Image (cartoon, rainbow, N blue to C red; front, side):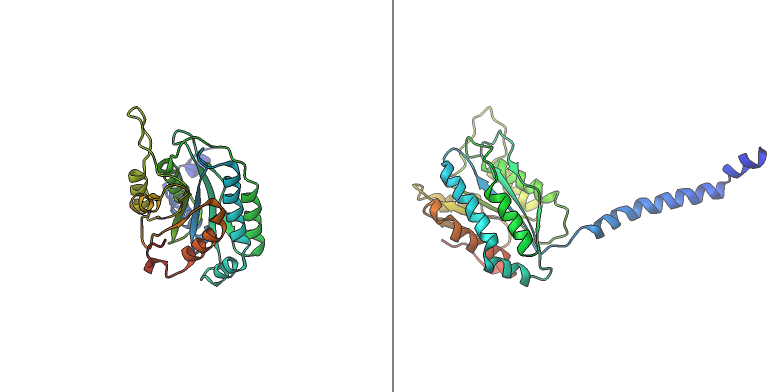
Length: 251
């Protein structure tokens, strides 16, 4: 009995146990980091679903994103990147007081994974509505990127919409675009925009002043949602270029 007690209370054995546990705790984050896949870009497509977007316009947005990932030029550009893969997610935003709707992250590394993402996008239900809470949407997109399980140096939010963010009521406490842009800057996220002009001739300038942010940030514009698909593909190709930081805003 005495030998058993003496053996369990051996100081050297106890310190060895502590050392092993301490080493395991230190090694765990390193092992987790090594298990995270490296991607060439993380992109969140932050899409406007406010009440100003008719249902058929909303469907054109979704179809345009799906078509871009089925397009051969987009797939070829992804295959030409150093790691030959990107991570993408959809985030649907509208009323600032309502939680945005989002897919999980998709790893695009070939035709099959691009098609799987396209299928999810074109069938994604419209579950949010209301006002144009862009700041809350961008804030949610920043948090989505910060939680992404990837190793990546290029992080981009690709926001599209058909109107400016309205001023909040005095009783509201919501994230507005200035705060959302500050969040993006702190997280080293670039914010690009696709302004759907419709009857708002000043919308491009508003996007330039309040949306675009980060290295190489740019804004594109279209006159109607019917022009969304080709514009989105052009925008995505530009965002995937390694030289994107040298580019400026375009109309």
